Length: 140
Image (spheres, one colour):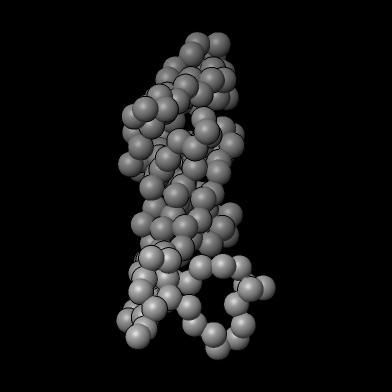
């Protein structure tokens, strides 16, 4: 069965914005201030965000992978980035960058189609011509 895969990469600023918005919607507002550092554990996909508060102190908050996934889905909706509803969305580390891996399995009908393997290049085989596969015995 054929499947379609799509990857959406996120910049660090997107991750921070999504985290701040998510925390607010969950009734756990992040510390007031400006994000100064994002630390990503690329093995567990957990995120630590340091915030410099207006009084000069620093505070941090954490986001686990499931929370960040929900936060990024919310960010995509807010920015009108289409996400298929019936798709599997996984947060992944691709070459050191955080991304959604979206997989959409085909719902089409799978037909049984006989496949004949032939050798040679397209230029050598004439339309309608069939040849036995390598090692096959020619018909008697």
